[in-house]
Length: 96
View (tube, rainbow, N blue to C red):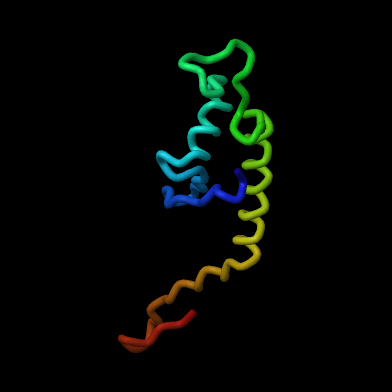
């Protein structure tokens, strides 16, 4: 099933993964998430999180990933340019 998973276009800052609508894999994933496993209604106690990742664990993964990306972006960031000031002398002359 993992081989059939794909990335879909999401909003900026969002990673969206899943299966193509109507595919066999989508049906299996839905059965696991809802706990139906091919039955018309959920079987009590059979539902499980997507990819078996608990929400608290997913939150931790996203937080770690976000911090790592932030550090990389800060390391690549260029310093802001210094502002230009009009010199007292001639019009059109500026100093940093």
